[in-house]
Length: 158
View 1 (cartoon, rainbow, N blue to C red):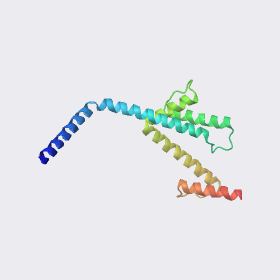
View 2 (view 1 turned 135 degrees about the vertical axis):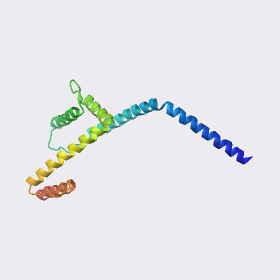
View 3 (view 1 turned 45 degrees about the horizontal axis):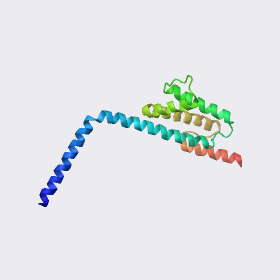
View 4 (view 1 turned 180 degrees about the vertical axis):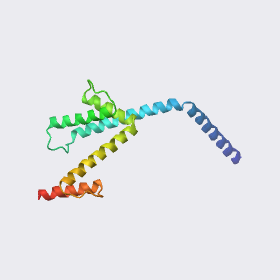
């Protein structure tokens, strides 16, 4: 009696699993599109809320006035918009930010490539600066260069 009951339960669970699997395979395309759009919208909302938090915090650009800082941020957004081939004509800074965030989510490979190129450019600038300050750059990582530049800055403060 017990074996037949557990066998019936097992068969019922298997049939439910097969029905679910059949339903999922027929509705996969629609479900995927829905999940992607839901995911993009959720990610955009998360990014916007984190951007709002960033606006409230002080900047590491301490020598810039508020207007200079806003111009600097706008310049960076325009650079990103050009990279992602986003039309900037007639868009406010907020609209531009949303369009860039959407492009980052929709084109993650392109975003990763941009970040790599940007880091390489910054590393090269850091190497040139370190070299101009008399710091040996041969075989040093970015972190090692940062530490040496930081030590140099601290020694000048004293």
